[in-house]
Image (tube, rainbow, N blue to C red):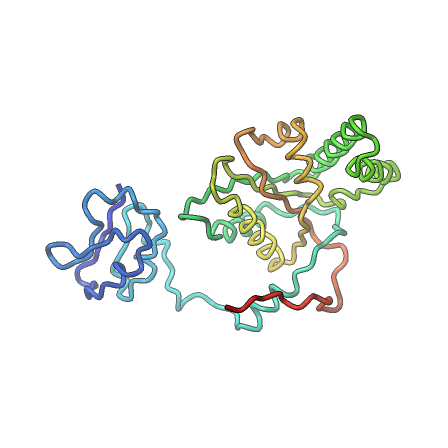
Length: 273
């Protein structure tokens, strides 16, 4: 059971931890200090809001390492314009260098990605990442196998016609599926997870964290469809039947970078209430 630990020398009994707890399980104890209400510790979702928002830095939770906490004032934050520019300059990259992303860069990206919000702080997302470019090429071959299977089933179906075009390009030496990306990252969640969009949020975090490091990404639509419909590819990736494929990103160092920003976009469709 999770336990709220309170430094009584620092705690001012302001009640911030009570107000900020989304589960509503923190109460003032008999001695006037906050505590997790008896028999309600199993309702704690380990979001640590009670710790992070404490103005006196007096709280911690039993599962946390206080040494890893960082004061917000010590974190360098971008200006509003810098943050906006990071988001607005993200482009889909479809030309990649034949160069691997170092493991350290991946680890840095996923250190950011694991901060992505998830429903009830469940943190359900599991990743499958092709670190070896040779494995990525095998993934491409399996997507082509899926298209061949679809063509055999119904040669005139729209997906089959698309597959035929992809196969023709592959025969000519063009990778129109994964665009020559040396890596892919696939996000999955348990099939019974009620909020599969958690995976899409995490994939977006991944794309933006990679962009901040100069690494290009592109959403892998063909890859996602193939994994969802072709058992051999699922087996190759180690994805179980009890898992839902949320989406995928192609990843690599950009071969070409945009020299201008911003492309035309439609006006935001907003219904103000």
